[in-house]
Length: 319
Image (cartoon, helix red, strand yellow):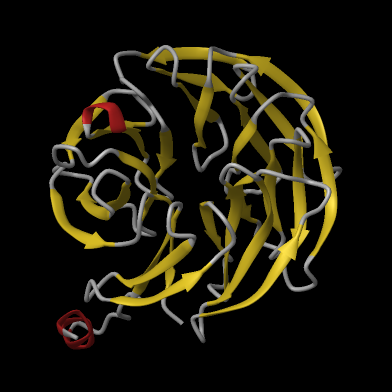
């Protein structure tokens, strides 16, 4: 309310309140949080083992990828954010182990399927798979998409590689073997670089997309489980649950600007950056919380309580 009042006095349009969506793997739920107040607005049921959550560009839908636990999952849970309710479950059969998820500007959803070694395109409103792009790589786990949404990049854990997919034709155009156990992946908003983490070597490799070759390797990152790109501001954030830390890098110079200690035993994993690029939200699977981090100072501003073993995080304007 204070922010709204000050914005009115200055003749500025106030920023829309933000909602945080957090997938809780062990609870089979997703938590909806009002960022301004810190209040939990809803805890909704999902399929088994929701690992990631994505929100449509218009803020209407949220979708969790129901990865499963001992038994491989094969569904998406669709949430109406206006009513904060589950409205449908999409069966992806025969595709199993859905994991990485990104909404495109046209409203279609991209989802990786590990068992199919593929990237799927899903019409969420109709609940059908409309396209399949084979990656021909083992463990296609996460997917990253630049702002122009012309291509996508999958991190393939077991092959230590990255695959580029043309989204118009839904075909894999090229694959690059980079390192070992490549999982965390993000593309800079300008689409010129892809940052790819190696869980085995504790490094992040920076790939020049035009040259399709590594141009730098950032070392001593422990377990770089996730990489997140700020939509503005030129920052990249790397989670390291092994050291209860995250690292803030300048994307252009690839220098480390801050190290964030999220607290003993917190184990930061999945994350997301606010729309203005000023704050990151990191899921803390060790303490069932989300940390709000100031990206300039590297300070943890506050913690939100969520469900058991949170991982995937998404953010959107409140409807």
